[in-house]
Image (cartoon, rainbow, N blue to C red; front, top):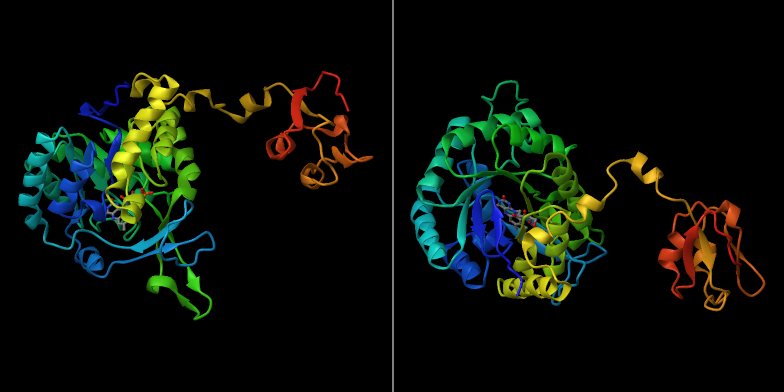
Length: 406
Ligand SMILES: Cc1cc2nc3c(=O)[nH]c(=O)nc-3n(C[C@H](O)[C@H](O)[C@H](O)COP(=O)(O)O)c2cc1C
């Protein structure tokens, strides 16, 4: 059986599946349930001292949207959008001292970790909330930078979102890193222009890892009533966002080599494998647990294990970054790849019943012929769209030099 354990910033996790900071980690009951269902780590919902964000959670709103971005009830489709608005833990942060201690003790007994998550309204309180969390015995600390910067920061444009600005990110990260002795994970927002630059700033300021990343903000309207769903802008996410998240996992892994916690778009164990192969070391899950229940966790963890066993991966390191390392590093590298051109197996082609390739070829290569598709090979740039979409598997790509059989 594959070894599922993983070292993340010097902390050993029994498997790579961690519960993200959100509602499934907002109480003793939920945190213990996540641990009981096999999570190797649980990141508590953000503990903060900004009253508006604490109040926001008392007015949380959640809806599930389908592929038409309309609310749905009942069965959750694979390609859902979780549309929601929520803030920090609404209790006073000191009320979380006994909760962190109790859940940390429970985690220790069950070979799991509780990870803190804080966000603060001033530089001093970034430091004091972080220390408070560390003093409760947690293994690591994640800092949630998705809110406006404290006004006293040097040069910070007041009101700028922290994780959109490398300088502000660095200042807060450094302050937190100086305040605690446990590894600090900086949670990035997908709404920054250049997440790699933000991750680099966090790394230089002493962050042990980054979480890539939290969610986008969106806006969806019920056109029958002309009103926005759930009252106004809200967080959007779901399995469809996975490739966008992985773009940054790949880039940060490749350029900075720092440990990454992957988050945003994970539905099942196979998604977790994809994150691992792209360069994340642990995966954080949230929306899918909110829709399927915490009971979804063991299924995901088993899927990771089964995949590793059936594909002969002995341990997490054997998966880590393998896809990222095979990716072209630059456009120049892509251009150096051998040129290809399309070839068609006329026995398999069912034109004119199927017209996929003739409709989709924008280089005038795939042409309606006499009962079959004809290929004008000299026009072909080898884009592979016809091969990737032909429902009859009638198209293959050959080296450009080779004679094309038509
Ligand atoms: C309802 C909800 C509440 C959330 N609350 C927090 C939070 O308090 N702190 C935080 O850092 N991230 C929060 N997040 C972001 C999640 O931790 C996670 O990064 C994000 O949902 C992407 O993962 P997913 O695709 O598995 O949902 C929240 C997300 C949702 C959907």
